[in-house]
Image (cartoon, rainbow, N blue to C red):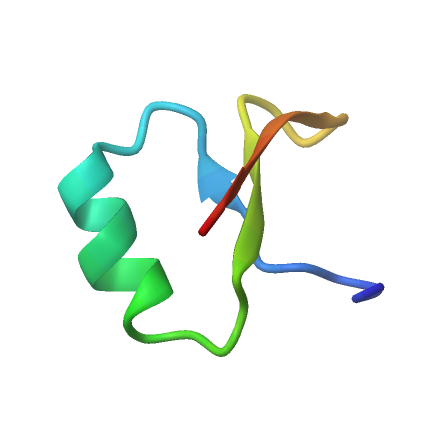
Length: 45
């Protein structure tokens, strides 16, 4: 588990998610955050 994972804004569009995160990062899963308190959901490939 990563101590400080890279997070996504909860309203991020799918194309920006694919282009900006999945193609450019070494992670396969990202927590989506609406605020800094807790993740809303997890996005993965």
